[in-house]
Image (tube, rainbow, N blue to C red; front, side, top):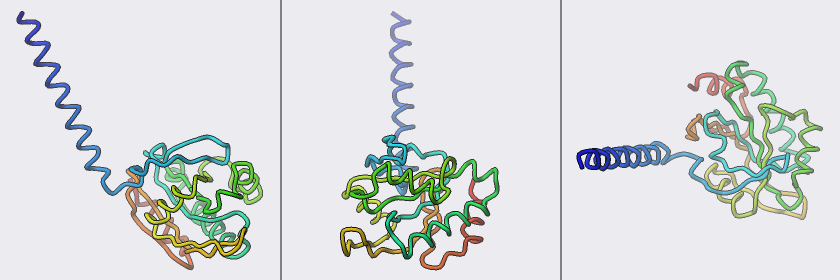
Length: 189
């Protein structure tokens, strides 16, 4: 009987500790991009959620692959930033390009784009999702975009840095100072 009572008390204690840990995690992540539960496809057609990126710093931009104006500049800015991040920090960082054109930017198109733009392998990740999830993420990032024609969008030019918990640390709009963004990433834990 004493063993049963001890087992019950121990179980209740462990359960309350786990519940406290879960509540603490949710409190810690209240401002985290990882709370978005949308599903995304990578350039390799793998399905992920943003929380799968937890544990790495993230540098994120929203683009579309058929863009001939701002997006090539944003991609070049992302490449400059990556080149200025300390190699040890770069291993702890994911450079994410999110498509705002899911109808045209299929995983195959994203993969070809990554190859053409030299964005293959670590730390590069290209993502697409459904329109609703893209709009939700754009709202979180304060990115505004509008479809002008079947293959042209007008959109904000914003690069966002998140820490390993998914908390927004920095945003740069317009002309990007790659040194400053890299310095921000290099300063993250």
